[in-house]
Image (cartoon, rainbow, N blue to C red):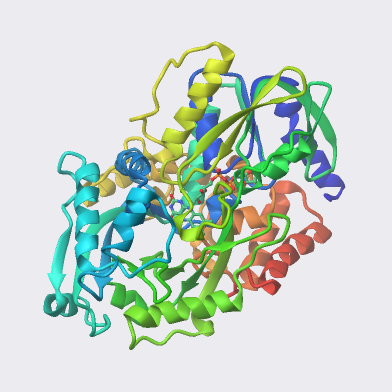
Length: 566
Ligand SMILES: Cc1cc2nc3c(=O)[nH]c(=O)nc-3n(C[C@H](O)[C@H](O)[C@H](O)COP(=O)(O)OP(=O)(O)OC[C@H]3O[C@@H](n4cnc5c(N)ncnc54)[C@H](O)[C@@H]3O)c2cc1C
């Protein structure tokens, strides 16, 4: 619980929520899907309030493989609708958020010609869930032809290509010498999903005072037609009423419904973990691409270069939502084995891990189906709280499809309110993706025009970090200066102050995990943590005790092996 000055700040922090105890719509959950729905409803002029128990984008949305993809492998589950929608949304996001979403060349190493031919179409046609069989070249070719049909965006995305063994090894010499073919196609990736999520939130808030959101505020009960909220910093409770409640609490959807007095059993999430490696040889072996392949157990796994590191994932393990999920040593061994499977000459070990993380996919419950074959599509289930309050529970939903899902949930909400849509989000730019310069020369020009008190090089660095919203940071640097951090020259004191002041930062973890990629890319040190905590202390009036507690909270995570200090 917060100490006295923090409590005072907390009540200031929530003044906008407490000012008005009635909303047309209450959204529970500030992951990407709750945020996308918030943005959409806010843009329709709806009085919408979003509450997030922790920080924005800290649940499943912080645990993804960072891919914006059609999901080649969902084809064999027969999920054609999902693949089509995902590819369309991938293409839209490349245009709407070019500051955070980039094309990702993807290569599948193939070790057989005909394997899986009987198993996969059988699964597609009958929706039965056999043991995965190795996917051979022929099957992958058919899948990628379908993928091209759905996803080429009028020819803007390149067609897939196949190479034989000799050419594959010439292009990627570290590949396993038994490789028979490689298939290459394009998908997309986001280096910093948390920042993209914040842009979605800001778009909603910018729609006007009718849109309100707060982090560290939980929905904990339902009493007399009101939802009870709890401030997670002080424990204080208060109530709000809403004409419609949306439960977008991801893998916690059943837990939230149960807390509201409406027990459900919609969810059956599976745990997935990742490690981030500092391994130059592996980085080079990937040749700038995602390597997407079938591991020896039949699971589809991946690795790709990101922020000068290599991301390796992932697992798919059924879990109990009441338990904490962590990336275990067994999973780490699994990741090391999968690297060996494609790049047998490359050595990996624990000393190269700079970060590891784990999360639960918000999947529908599905009996004893093999986790890899559980549908990744979403649905919206209608229910009722008390006598009169409709509640829409979201079951499922990927990162890739957040805009379409937000639109879908918003449409059902508008229906329930008896209102109609006034604008579409289909081709609206997102946050700092608005007017984002695409070519190197346009970027340089933007930087020299907007640099103000800083150098054009620094302005370009901020453009790449925040998109065109960098102008907000630059305006703050004009006031606070741009003195580099002592323990990380890539950031300045003024920049961190700007993030703290403008981006709903409550804890030190918010800064290192979600406003920056410092933890993910393994750039943290104890001295940097202390420097950041002291900057936050002056903005947030923290005592020495507050500072130690904040640093400890991150060190504790290190102890539970959620992340590793460099
Ligand atoms: C290992 C893994 C890899 C993945 N890889 C990809 C990928 O590469 N590409 C892709 O498209 N998708 C991927 N996904 C899926 C994607 O990340 C998730 O489906 C998506 O982020 C879910 O977002 P959400 O908003 O529905 O849920 P969440 O992000 O979990 O948000 C729900 C929020 O609700 C909050 N909450 C819970 N209870 C309450 C309460 N009572 N009051 C207030 N707030 C509450 C939680 O704190 C949480 O922040 C992956 C998922 C995992 C786990």
